[in-house]
Image (cartoon, rainbow, N blue to C red):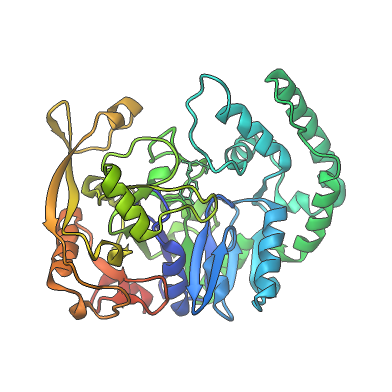
Length: 434
Ligand code: IMP
C-alpha cells in the first residue's frame, strides 16, 4: 500500500500534470503540497484540454479526491473560477475537492507588493509569474497571513483584512506605488467567494492521515520543480516554497513514515521560465527548435520558455536532495527529428571539474557545461506505449541518461494523452503503482 510523491526534477513544466493524471488511476487521493496558481498543469483527455492551476489533476478522474494542502497559497477568486470551469465541463469538483483550512490566502494587495520587489529600479528581477505568490508566503512566514480557516469566517476576514490593508498601504506609499492596495469592492468580492469555498474547506491533514490509516492510497504532488525550491534551487531565482520531496510532509501533514516512494519527472531535454542561471541552455537556433517542437510556452503566463539540453549533473543533484526511486521522462517525442542530441554530462568551473551544485549565484553563473553528443533517432516515437517499439537509438539515449544519473527510468511519456505512456515492467516505479 504505497503512498508516493511525484515532483519535478528540473525547473518545472516537466509534464507532471499528465503523469499525475495517468498514475491517479491506481490511487484514491491526489494532494498538492506547495505553490499556488503560478503552476499550470495541462491535461488532454481526448479532444478536451484542461489547464489546472490550483487543483491537482486527480480531480479529472471520477471518484478520486483532490486536496489543496496547507503548504499551498490559494487565490480565492481564481480558485472559484477554476472550480466553476471544471463544473461546467461536467466534473463534480465540489463533492471531491478538499481545501486545507491551514492554507494561506493570496489577496489583491500581494500583487501590489510583488511589484515593489520586481519593478524597483536597480533590483534584479526574478521574472516571477506576478501572481503574488512570494508576498503571500512572506506574510505566512512573518505570521501576518490570512489562512483559509479565517478567510471563510466573515468577521475574522474583515478584521484581518483591515489591519493587513493598513500595513500594505503604508508600504506602497513609502515605495511610491500608485496602485490601490485593495480596490473598492475587493473585500466584498472576497466575502462572496469565501461563501462559495466554505463547504470545501476542512482539516486536510486529518483527512489524509485517516485515509492512509484506512488503507487508501495517496499521491502527493509538487509543483514548480526542484531547482525552483526555496532552499535547494538556484536562489534567489526560485519560487517561495518547498517544491522538493521534503516539502510534501510539511505541506500536507502526512508524515514521512507514511510515504513509500518518490518519483521525479524530467523532460528528455530541459526548460526554464524567468531569470536565473541555466548551465545547459541551448543557443538561439537549438533553443528555437526545441521551443517550437515542444510548444514550450507557459500555460499560465504564455511566456516563451528558455530551452536547453538534458543536464545530468543537475539531475544527479535533484535525485540526491529528493531521493528519487524512479524517473519519468516526458516529451521524448520532441527530440524525434534531431540529428544529434547534446547532453550536458558534467560541470567545470575555472577549468576544474566540480561535483557539487554551487550555492552562490556567482558559482552557478560560472558553470562551464561539459557536452557529449548522442546520435538522434530520426524516427517517430510519438504515441508509442511499448518500450520495445522505441527506436534503438532512443533506447540508447534513455539508457545513457539512466547510467549517468544513476536513477532508473520507470516510465516514458510519448505524448500528452493518458495512453501515450510507456511503463517499464519490473521497474521500481511499477512496483510502487501496484
Ligand atoms: P513565482 O513563483 O511567481 O514567485 O516565480 C518565481 C520563479 O519561479 C520565476 O522564475 C517563475 O518563472 C518560476 N515559476 C513559478 N511557477 C512556475 C511553474 O509552474 N513553472 C515554471 N516556472 C515557474
